[in-house]
Image (tube, rainbow, N blue to C red; front, side, top):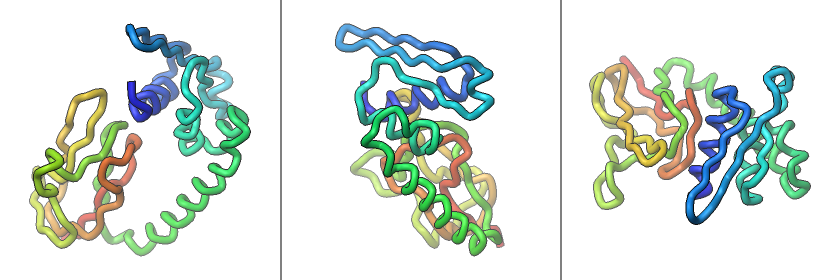
Length: 176
């Protein structure tokens, strides 16, 4: 199991409200436990029982203050996550006139159908509602994300091969 798959699984467990998920394979065993729902309501995130050290870094980005106690070397990450959010807030005011295409799921964002093919869309391309903009891989399934409005691609907000979250903005489209 790859690190990004583990991170997706952790996020899924956190959002689904499940208390425990255990996956066992011939090569590995992983158990992800979360505290009671009462603890989640106080913004305490899920805790991992058996996961490699880099995996909690994803939880730091999802819940910066909560995941920091998991490992002492992760403490600087919350400041970086907060800085990214404040930069996004500044650019969001400039981009308010544009339509956001958001991710319908957690997964890995790909701009190309395969590594040897060209990107689905470029900045400046005109798209119609229903045109494929990208692919999101979730648990080895590739899901095409389509434009929900017609217009011109103004900005691609996510780098290729990057993990994304549910409802994360992916593209800005100028509908005029």
